[in-house]
Length: 117
Image (spheres, rainbow, N blue to C red):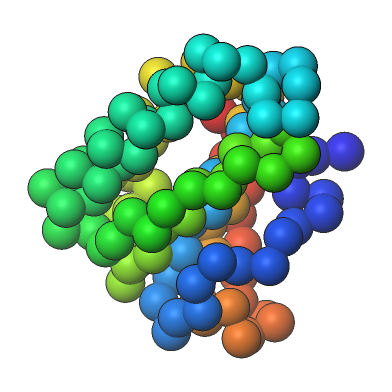
């Protein structure tokens, strides 16, 4: 069963494409101290990479029940993920997955692709 088997509600409803990343954190309800301490740095790197690539916006993160969710949106999910990928693969938490959604959250037929991190 993949990390996106039980997908949470999207943090941002938009007519844009979205990238939602989900990492399983270490032991404990909020992950390990190292995981939590490094989330701020990851958010900064993602925001900068997305802005530099002019690929969209980094919306933020959420930690819930030992999992970290990261949300970003833009006009092209592939370009957005390309900008984000170096920072995502460098983040130490595993397992991780990125869900690329090619259309608005309101469209149940929008294509989705999952990448393992």
